[in-house]
Every structure is written in structure tokens, then in C-alpha cells.
Image (cartoon, rainbow, N blue to C red):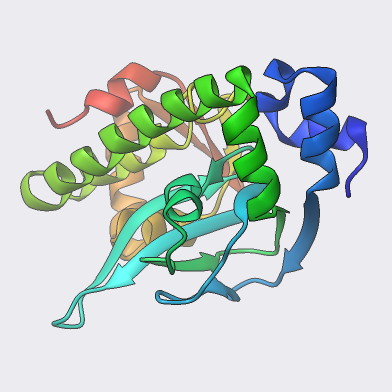
Length: 224
């Protein structure tokens, strides 16, 4: 069980819960730490917890039958995921890797299902979340087939600032070029070149140890 103040800090959706629902939620959540490079789970593993990133950076990915590594999404602090897998009660269909030292909030399946069955506010959040994630993964097909490296990087970064998935309005993100490359499915060298192009377009500013987004809509639509 985590403290009430901490839950409010790490889970923006908790603001929509009633007092009883909030208490039920925090009693069903624990936190766990993972070191840089650690697998949180492998494809085919059971991870029966609804999960949130409370600190750090996580990559969702998989490897195709011909050995090609595919990045599905990046998740920074404030992002919650895995609701579909928990509802379907099935193994994970992707690998989860901590790209840096990371802390995860894990809600047990029983608590998640209780909120799903009893909380109007929680279900409203889930509908918004499902809709946004569906758009993200449909867009992923477009990125892979139609967009060049700078555009793929731009779109990947834009998802990390999606206002539905993250309620943190801060437009700066501490992230390395290596991490950006891993999330975009490109090399560090190509990530560096792509960032220079996007900075030249006035879409972002590359800073020591991170980036600041100057035009989120421009990033989300770049290359389209």
C-alpha cells in the first residue's frame, strides 16, 4: 500500500475517484525499482498488475519473427499502461525494458477489476486511455512504413508529451540521445542528426541532458 499523497502525485487519474475508490486503489498498489537495462517483463510473461511509471523511462518493444527489433512505445514518468492485458487476463505481448533506473507502481489485478466494476471516474479515464493508445499504435504502422528518421523521432517524442496520457504540462524532458534513438528505433548517430534537423525547424531545443519542446503540434505532424 502506498501513501495517499504519493498516489496523488504519481496517478493523475486518482483525482476522479471517490474517497472510497481512492482508498481501495492505494491499498492495491506497491512500488518496485528496476535498474537500467533490466527487463520488467519479457513477451509471454505474466505481469498481472496494471502499471505506472513513477520515475525513469520504459520501452515497450518486441522482436519480429525475422529478428527485427520493433519499438512499440516509450513511457515516461506519469504514464500508465497494460489495462488491456489485465482485462483479458493474458500474458504480455511485448517486452518491457527500463532504459534508465526506473520505479514502477503496480496495481494488483483484483483492485484494478474492482475499480473497473465500481468506479465511473476510473472507467472514463480508461476510455480516454484506450482511445489514445489505439491512435498511437495505428500511427506506429504509418511511422514504420512511410516516415523517414527525423519524422519518426518527432512523432515518438510528441507521444511522450501527449496531454491525454500525461498531465504534466512541463515541456522539458530529461532524456539522452541514446534513449531517444532507442524509443524511435534509430541509431544514436541518426537521432543526433534528426534532433539537429528538428531544432533547425524550431520544433524543439536540444539542451544538456535533455530537450525542450517548442512546438508540440509541429512535432506531432512533422513529415505528414
